[in-house]
Image (cartoon, rainbow, N blue to C red; front, side, top):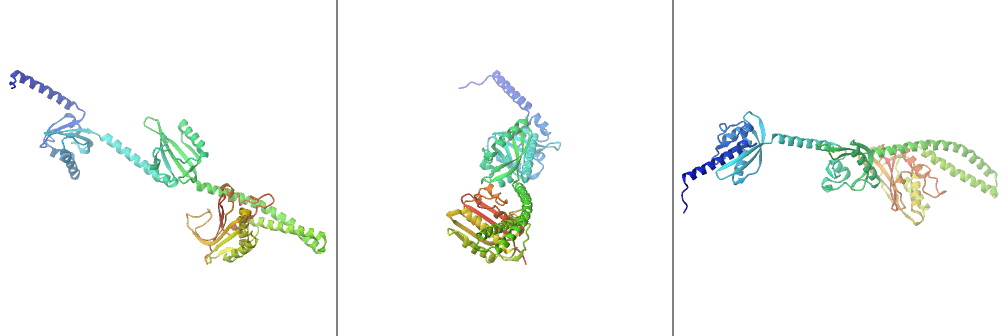
Length: 505
């Protein structure tokens, strides 16, 4: 049985409780956060000095929770939302969720406040922290990120943002469209799009940008996910953190493949024009030399008996002169200094006639397959020159297949081009008659395709070709306002496709 405490003992306990209360009061009042004690009926028991400093409200201003809600949250809908949140949190004793709300202070100023409430059996303790500056900073940072994202997103050029380790942090839509990779599949990885022959240049430029701190700009190449080589004008700059420490790179990769293609086509056109002018001049002079040779040889042949050994020699001279004349004519066609008369016609008959002639001249091991559409419309052309195109391309295909033989496929059909499918900068959208000749020969490397239309260029053995066949085809096609496309794969053959504009009557 416990004895009752004496009066002195009770006084000591009271003093202890006073000390504890004073200590707790000092803690509450000196706390750098607003603190409010609320009983279960919603009455405010106590608010500390910092609460008043933070909000402007005294205990007299907000004697209970209802008045606090009315003053701090004047917007009805917002007040209803917060009251509901408070009720939900109050259902469970203990530390509640940290909440962030915008309040209206006594002076009308708005502040972003973080609330941390502890729900006890008989009262609630709410701690208020002013996070207005932090909230505004976060909002400004978010807006800055969104603004930057919008700028990068609107950029038609591919953009990649890298961290200090060289891993991508951001890729804009143009990057994904151009190169094929998404950010998700590249997380924590380096982008595998630097070709082997560009690695040294890339490393040197990265070293330069981090050494000098200045942006770098240079032309290079990059690979797409599908392995396509893309010409790029690359611009890169360092990203620094708040302390000025290098934190990554932002890289702009402008696709200049079309521009490079146009530059190459222009250079080729200028080269062909220069060679054509030179070749045309030489051909005219050579023609002037050939004329008396042929004329005098014809006269000598008429004056010489056929059984004479001299007649046979003269005949060989005359045949050689004829071949030289034909070569000169090809040169003149290539240089566009020989006139051809274009007329509106269908190509089906001419192509079939050329095929008949080819068939009789081709080795038996070469099979010719033809697909000639009857519905092909009219083009402006010269039948003799069309015949020559087919003959030259067929002869080229035959040579590519050699003694082992193979297959030549010839097709004639119509094709419609829109703005995006054009194969030449001078080509216009519309309907074209498409003449295609392909073979199963040895094919060519890409670098060789660029040279095949150059005059006097040939892959044949010395003495087996003049190198004027494809140059002549190119000259004829251009003279007929047509376009030519070549595709080839080593050991898988080549395809020559010629497009003639359809004539609309």
